[in-house]
Length: 281
Image 1: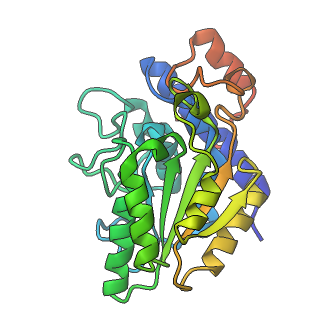
Image 2 (image 1 turned 180 degrees about the vertical axis):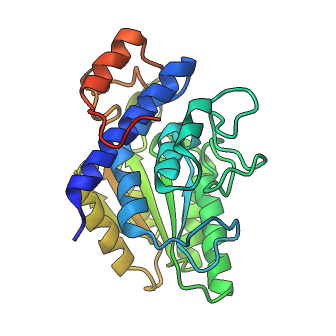
Image 3 (image 1 turned 90 degrees about the horizontal axis):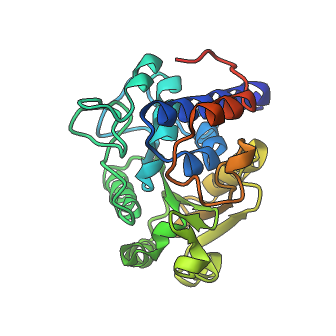
């Protein structure tokens, strides 16, 4: 049984990390990071089977790839809180020569990061390759990937979606962060994508629709359902409805905070809505 008191406390702390990181350098992407906080906390603390330490090849453990790499503040916070590197290092976010760049990179060897990401539309292809590698090596663990809904406007995704179904990549669980917003406005205003769940189903995927994508129990239940469907000749996708900027009232229900940092007063307001629970860095 998940410890929801701990998980909710961790969600609050991760939100604080995100807000403080982007505020310090007046740069970064808080909106999507806050919207996916519950998901990544649930994934790393309740769902994935992980080894102690970090090995780049990831043999014998579940793997996660962040395709929408601009939500790196969330990724870095969860990795640090999970013990991949010191929490204190979060202070170096987006600084020159830091391992914690605006988009995750691999050349500095940051534990937990297996691929540079943020060039949108590529993460699913990487995850498919990793999942096929596991199959070839008789590794029974699962590959997870998180994508933004806006990046589904990139054509490479649809080639990958077709490929995964056609090749029965059934050790893959993809999640689409469906918040309906991107940097220039709503996804419908920028480029409407219609029925995303229906499109995945038409391409031959097993589709799970998660209406409460900011509720820990709903997320954990959806991920466990997805796990139960692996190994059945279909890749799996969770269409996860979230609210961009979740947990900070003035950042919600707008695309304005996709890529904007809070000022001093706004930071204090946001932190007051998310109490310190595990100690700030």
